[in-house]
Image (tube, rainbow, N blue to C red; front, side, top):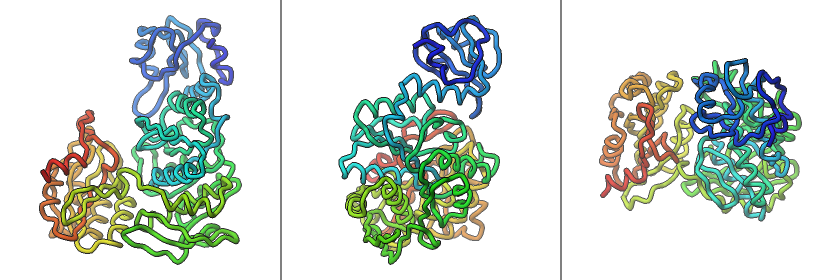
Length: 476
């Protein structure tokens, strides 16, 4: 493809060279550039791609797209915003695959992964081939691909869309992170339905405050034909301001779509779903109040897509749980071991509240907080865990470039007065070993934070670390 064709929808000016040249792949990492490729210099998220233009040129780049003129010996196109440019160029490069399918976007702090899987599994049962893009993995129908992030950069995103369209997918359901929305990775996608789950403190290392975090999330609803919004969440009003046609769901609020007569058990949740003239008994085999909210979000999206009450109820009945979300590990022990991705104050509170609903005896939680992220949530998580669990083991969870002992100490500042019911063990394996050693018959050991992850991020390196394997080794 010629450069002028690739950048047809981009507002740019040539600083040097010609846009008549043929270009190869689109790259944002100078180390991966090969002869004939085009390199987009992206700014933000801790680095500036303009610093790597020389390296891209040395590796054979035929053209560069940048936000200001730089010295280079190849074609240079200058644009005001290289992230907008790469989103438009990626769509053009892959022949606009997003126009060949219908999209459902899900955003929020917690619940995105479960909600996307609920929607996909209901569509699957109806016989509609559906793609999925999310934190755990990417799915093209039943084909599973490794995930490189919740919402990847535009070139990878549109490459996935092309594969999905060519494979016959009619729908794509995807998680939309605040970073992706703020950085224009989803630019140009028209969503049939946009879903909002909730908003709690997270990613404040990137967003300047909660209002900025909410603003980024709300972008999805300006891109959606119909919005399905959690009316019980305090940020619902912010999301609704960006939405056009909108329906709310909830338990406590005067929502358009409601769950009533809710029955909780260790086997899941049963409730009556009311919407307009509909009143349908719904069953989901994932326990906890948060599962009711996730179910309502998925049901609401499917209803907006035109599925019947019967189709939705039948699909919800066979929905399977998601790896790392309230996942029960097969241990053959008199106590139960669960793994959950909860890594925020709200996430910890939700999973402990759900487990408390069916726990027969003690709940022992193992948890930590990630490094190089907002520090304010650390004592909050400690306080919530101390209040809701019977015993806490505070440990390390992806310390990244921070000292894990320092992170643990910050968590403990929120646990003052609960010294009798916690122990700090920085080594995560030893923390798990201790938790299992004190568990008795009927207890539940909850390992929070890692969820689907199979690594620990320590000192800038990702080390293999699958808690399922760790548990097996300890019990052996």
